[in-house]
Length: 543
Image (cartoon, rainbow, N blue to C red):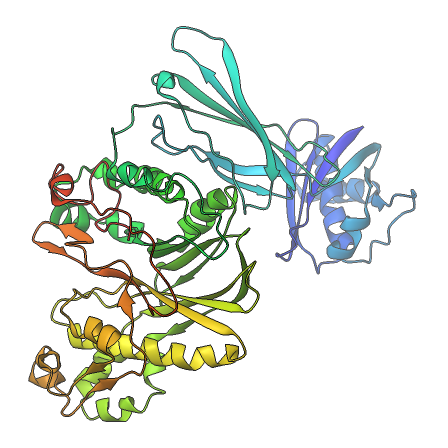
């Protein structure tokens, strides 16, 4: 008995029918709302054509062809062998169907069999770095990954690792080649299964050759201090890191003007994400805040991989942008209470200071045209029910001569969080501000965070020139924060610009800093001229 495959995607208004005519496969894609008799008529016509009766040389022969088609029956049977009413819609009839009868042929219908739609390995596979397949599948509840290795001088394959993971794309498996595998062929076989653990179509196979790694990366020195996860319930490790979005790193301008010293292959995301992933999991952090995180790469790569290591994750794009902020957190240490984001520009419109800024249209337009957001994740440590840890993750405007813009962005952030925290007035609230603030330690933004004030007489208000000068503007905030990561010599290191821009701010009465891992030295940063490089995947370093 032949088989017919019917795909009914839950989020799409189509039904796809795939079956064997005998000499070729026949495929139909129909709307779910269409009456099933219409597609059955098309199936009858294909059946007549297969029998060799279709002739269109003249009108009589065409009419005979249609008569032949009408003499053939085509109908669906349900699991009890009863004929399904062909006045039903495709969306109603096909999910009930167990058999398709066409003339003297009967097809067993397979509804939504699990299938791999695409599978590939990264362009770069290196020893010591996690290899994560890029896979999309449908109707798969689980996927088996089998990793094999074959030496150059042998046809024999050795099974190195096998794992079965969920198939909803929220988790993927990774394999880390050893040094002795350099020059060998790595082979991956992926097999899909449905809820009944029925195997899907033919397994998908991909191969790649293992290349040497770049050598010791600077972050591996830091990993010496973060070899284990923290276990003390009132102690946690947090990291903030601008990982350089692929949407910027892959442009010709970036490769020829901004980072001409970095080889193009080292700017390729397939290469950089290997370094980024190894760097992230090596920190054994409880909370990781990322900036310039591409949504697609986060959803398809970072989040699934980190989930396999026990992390949950959320990502939000900047306004009208392909990249934004992301937060990863250890599932076994925190419960998620709330996740939201807000536009800094829209927040400004709701503050009293906005009326004063409106007196300077150029300044107002420049502020409102910024796409920066605040990502806010509120966590409850699992052994501290009354604590509400509010983690704010952001990335401020980057242009030079815009410290006044960033100071106002910081003010908007503080005021928004000040209002947001009120929803947890019955709890012990602790707040951390993490991100790439594009502000060095002497800027007005850092002054606002640490002193709670930027006076109207501050020189920052003249930074945008006369057309952006707003008279008597000042910023006040009741809370004062300190940089828990201190003020390293740099967190951003490129040719012509070396500065500290990234921070984790908090209140010292709420947190005690036990350890700050060592920062990269200038000597290390300049080994390959500047950042990024073949051993450092971003122009920033993690703090």
